[in-house]
Length: 163
Length: 457
Image: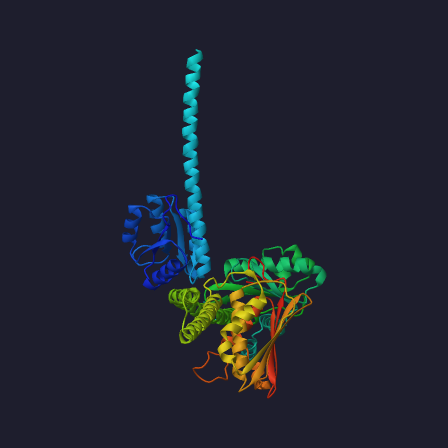
C-alpha cells in the first residue's frame, strides 16, 4: 500500500549512487510497484542541493563513492534535516563499517548489495512510517504545549478573577 | 783459585754415565730419586737429603730423603737444614771431613748425637741462582769424605742442576700443552654447539619464510578476492533486481485488460520463465561470491565456533566445477557440535584434499565425505575412487615441495600446509591408499578445540 505524507502527496525518495545501473534498477522497481516519487543522483553535491530544497522524505546512499563516502553524505543530510530517514547501501565487505555507522551517524537501516526487491520495499516503507510517526509525535507535542500554555493562561485569569 | 783436586778417570766416566742417565729421565720425581741415589752411591755416603727451592718461593723444601731413620727424621732434617743454610748463605759447598776433629769448634750436639762422622753439602746452581742443595753424611768412621769427593760431587751437582732445570721446563711445557689442548677442545665444543644452534635457527628461519610466503599469498589472494567480489556485487545487484522487476512487469502486463494474441501471450510467458531462470542464476552467483569471500577471508587467524559441515559445504561449492557431471559427491554427515577453530584455515585443508581427490579421479568416480564424533574427537574422512598413491609416495606426501603434478601445476605445499594446520589444531591428518582403488584422508580434531590464545601457538 503506498504511503502518503501529511499533505497527501506521495513520499519522495532520493537515491545516490555513483553507478547508473543501480539507480536505474532501484527507480524502475519503485516506480513499478509503488507510488513514491524517486529522484536519483550520481553526484553528492547535487544530491545535497536537492535535499536543501526540501520535501525529501527518505534518502538511500551507496557506501563507497569516488567523490564522497556514503556515511559523510548521510551525516550532512542529517544536519540539513534530521527527520529524513537515512539508509545506506553496502557491499558485503563493508557491512561491519556500515553497522558501526548506524550507531555513530544514526542510520535507520543498511541494505546489502545485491538486495531482494521485496526487502528493499519493506525497509523503505518502514522508514517512511517511522518518519510519519515522528512527525505526528512532534505535532502532538506542539499541540500539547499550546494547550498547556492556554491552560496556564486560563489559570491566571481565574486567579485574577478571584483575587 | 785452588787447583781442583784431581778427578779420577773412573770418576769422569761415572760422571759421563750419570749425565746421560739423568738427562734421559724426564719424570721429575724419578729424576730427583736418581740424582740422590747416584750421589750417595758415587761418594759412598750413608744418607742424605735433596732440597729444592720452589719456583716462586724462597724456602728450600726437602724433596728427597734417603735412608734417614724415620724416628730421627726431624732431627736429621733440622741438621741438614742448618748445613744447607750455611751453603745457601755463603754460596760455597761445605765439607766436614772429620766431625770430632773440627778445629776450634765444638761440634753441634746433634752431630754427636747422631754419631755423624763426615758431612758434605753442595749447592745445586743454575746460571746464577740457587736451585737447591744436596746434603750427604755418613757415620762410617773408617770412611770419610775427601776433597776429591767434594770436587766430584760439585761436578755432579752441576749436571744435576741442569737436568733438574730441563725436567722442570719439560713439565712446564707439558702443562701448557695440556692446557692448550683442553682449551682447544673446549673451543671446538663451543663452536660445534654454536653450529648446531645456527642450524636450528636457520631451519626455523626457513619455516618462518615459508609461513610468511603463505600468509603473504593468502593476504594478496584475500585482497584480490575481496576486490573482485566487491566489483561483481554492483552489476550482479542490478541484474538480479532487474530480473525481479521483469517478472513483476510481465505479471502486470498479463493482468492488464484487453485480450492478448496467443503469440504475445506465449512470448510473455517465455520471457517470464527466462527472467525467473536469470533470477535463480543470480542467486547462485551470489552464493559463489560469498563462498569465495568466506574462503579467503582476511581475518585469517580468527578463532571462532564454526559448524564444520558449513565449511565443507562451502568448499564443495567452490570445487563444484571439478566434479560436475563426472564425480558423485556423497555426504555422510554425522551429528557434530560446533568446533572452536581457525575456520578459514580448516577450509584450506578441505580445499586441498578435495581438489586432490577430484584430480586423482580420471573420468567418472566418487568422492565421499563422512563425519563423525568419537572419543572426544571430531573425525572427517574424505575418500575418493581415484588412482591411489604408491607406498613410496605415501611416505613423502606431506613433505613440502613434494608433488606428482608436474612442474608449474602445483607448489607441492598444499598437503604440507594442511598437515601443519591440523597439527596446530592439535589434531592428526592420516592418509591411507591403494593404487588403483582410491585414497582416504582422515582428519581427527579434538572437540575441545583451540583456546583463546590459540592452542599450541
